[in-house]
Image (cartoon, rainbow, N blue to C red; front, side, top):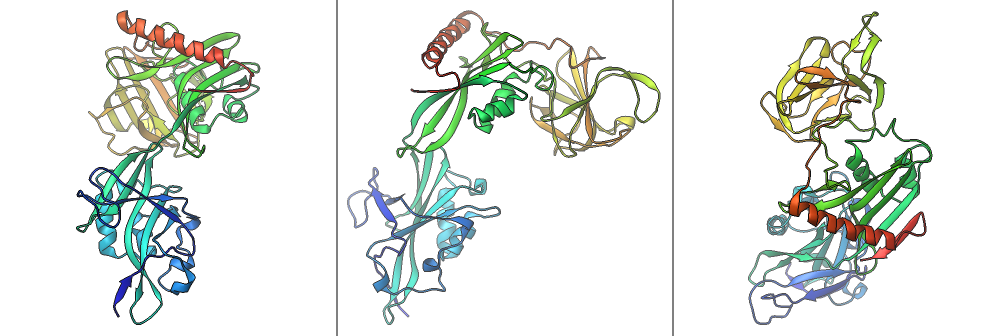
Length: 448
């Protein structure tokens, strides 16, 4: 049975716009080489990664049911989905799917596809010469957002095969300022004020070297956050960006930080004096944990008698990630008596840290391995002499164990000279913009 290509629009009624890129002719020919690249506009979204009935190979539609032109449809990626699987669901041949994915791979790793992402597929259906039933037809290409600021478009080359093009999405940037008071929890108060969870996590991370969020927060303390937002041409929010400026008011004392990129390209948060908020070591290398045992003399829960506890214990569910408190190298990783699964890291000539009772180590953790601050090194467990899942954490200064909650943390980077002068100029501009949107007290917005 012979097939002839006919231009139709599927009953879903999607629109296809063709962008003429340099060296890329539009459909129907034209000078220049390359491939025409379809940009899908207002295609419907089908949830659950199932092709709508009109597009399944098992349900054929007659030409009288459709209009002229290619059609496009959008999948929302579900758990376990792959691009190859979605193309197969749409009736795309294995050969075309493989060629399109190979072209896509030049700009985007298909393995990075995640649930919630959307993939738009464009098809030109065909009809048999001896029948008026439609087949899936000719696969023209696909498009997807590789990140919030870019779109990858894959289209057929006139001479065969596929070509991928990476386009920058036109976005409008703005700055949102949110401020409020804390009753019990910064996370809860920030969420009620409209701060997205990812921005709250960044805020907590920026202060985690100096603030103990379980014990330093008091009712009546305050917060303020300025962060970037990105909207598309239709006004839809597509991304919440980095925090530009934040301040916590704790027990009446204000602690501001500013985002700054140094001359050597490093971006970090700095206080008013130009000192990095990031310290050499983290006080609590675990998220969402409860302090279950402090540093000092205590009655041991297993041995039953009093002895010095030369670390702090953080109770957390088994499997909770444990982070490296500071950049360094592993000097021990393995079983160590009552400590159970144990890792010790050396950070510099003065400081080392130790982590005990782990359920297991993260992949690759072994003696001699260099790790970065904040990298996952293991997971909470209850190995060794332990009555329940928790992290036993130690800081050692010149080989002597000290209280992680009271030790003066070694400072991070301090800006000097021209670098400090540049930072102060950036800080002054941020302060000016913050003052311009200071009211109302809870939420204020300013366009950039």
